[in-house]
Image (cartoon, rainbow, N blue to C red; front, side):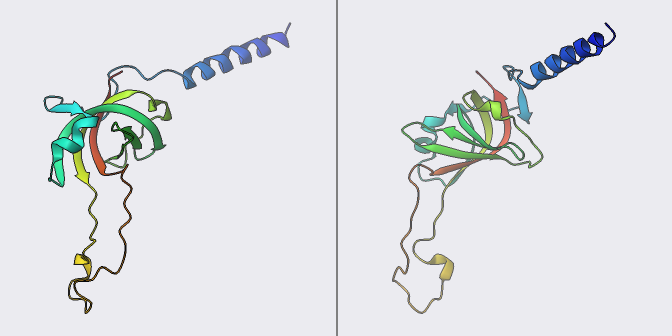
Length: 155
């Protein structure tokens, strides 16, 4: 009997710890600052809304595809039509759980389009002016990046 009691206690505590590891993320959980949802739009409309602007401050709602780096808050958001928004937190001290994948979230921050100097602007004053010396390879699925200031779990 004396040997059985520690075994039972060990089984009870390990079951409690295991249950705590897999707790679901509650609706309304906030990471970073609480997002302002007054100007919120679906992630699929972000690129069209930006038009020719390279950066805008906004809030978007979308589904998290995967969490790439939990520490620092790096994740990918579905932008519709096979496109992906690469997002990361402005504050590198924010950690997000991997279980966020598949959940719908509302994020606020700064959206920016990819900028590529394909006309050699970064080499201004080069002796071979007017000629493109390299081919620009951009991934059409990753056009917009998002610097997140706040995230709230929606669904």
